[in-house]
Image (tube, rainbow, N blue to C red; front, top):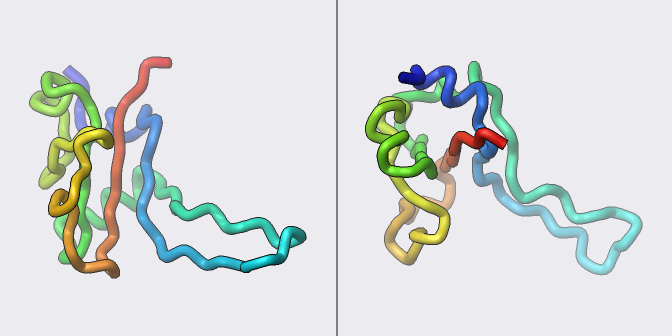
Length: 100
C-alpha cells in the first residue's frame, strides 16, 4: 500500500490553476504556462487551508487506498459545470500517479 506522500512523489500531474496573463499579438513574448507546478512540500503545507481544493485523478481503487486528506476523486474527463468551486480565486490542485 502506498502512502499519500509517496503518491505525490510519483505524481505525473500536480497542477494548480493560476490566472492567465495574455500578451495579445506579441509573438516574441510567448503566452505563459496557464498552470503552476507545486512540489510535494508546497502541497503538504496547503492541506486543510480554506480556498484550497485538491482533486485526485487516480483510478477508484488507488484513490480509496491512497488519497490525500480532503482530496476529491475526479477524473479530468468528468469535470463538468458545477464540479469545481465557483470562486475563481480558489487554488485547485490536481494530481494523479503514473507508473510510466
